[in-house]
Amino acid sequence: MDPAGSTDHHFSGAARNILIEWLEIFALKSEQDLYDVIRFYSETYDEVKNRYPNAKNIFWLEERLIEKFRGTDHTLLTLSQIQPILKSIDFS
Image (cartoon, rainbow, N blue to C red; front, side, top):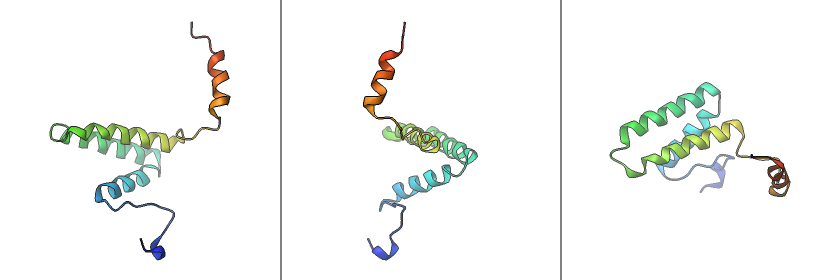
């Protein structure tokens, strides 16, 4: 990779990965854009599910977009801080 072209954004060499990254960047702009990308993924799945056995991976991409948009892929608590909270919950 040419260091002169290096930025904070990572672009993979594979065309498929570049498209996924572009869709991810677009989805993070607004809630409507997130909805549009998820709708695009859903429509794409409907079109390719019978031809490609790994098409179900699209659902993982949708979940990842939602987590990134809402910031839920980051937690402020460590596992040792979360454990006592879960133990204190009465599930009965």
